[in-house]
Length: 326
Image (cartoon, rainbow, N blue to C red; front, top):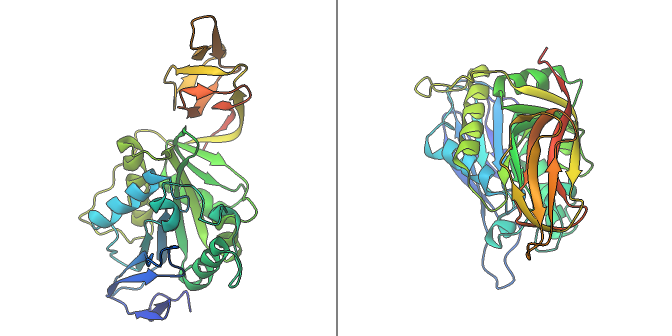
């Protein structure tokens, strides 16, 4: 396979010519009751040469916000490019999606087994096929995620530091927040970087939930990215943000000092001053009430929305070093 979008591209043995649209089904394994489980790969090609862009979601099967973003890109026909090729995979981990679970049936986190193995575990085999069948033809990618374990992420792009091209793409996407984050060994993003694919990782919302505002942030960011690459059909206007993305270089977790019921003050996405009340933790019997306050000035970029927490649980993620875009 080649990264030259002027020519025929091939995914899982199926050819897609310039100007063609095709849905290709990846079927690596069946369910335990022999039911086939197919993962749709939706490919739209322009007749005009241009980059190949991948929009993917559902690598964790319970992260529905990302699935909704890619679904909207398809339903609104934003994935029909003016130039180049757009590949959409709304649900990579179909097994987890069916079971409302983060992991694969083998108990593995798909986002920790890349680059995978042709003869390894089920998750490892999926990772291998994604990297060998799809990523070699991709130039740019956005992988959409949500917070796990009831933790709600403010809309944010994550990228590694000291990559000038990724920095430009993050500026163009212009999510409310942009975090510098190292690639994790075994992750989709880490393996994609080794294949010279420029990948942005989007985080927004929480698991097993669809949030309209988060979906809007993801869709509008994708449109701005496509416009920057000269791929967006002119009928899809881009929505400019009123402000530039806030870059966060360092942050810290605030952890529960007691177990109990968590009463959140809804500060997600807000700038708070040191000492601001973020939540209270109570017992169910009215015996105690403990205040959770901001330890420093900063933005709340993640909030635990679980009504029950245990001592030591991460409940808020707050920035403590902010930088300008430049």
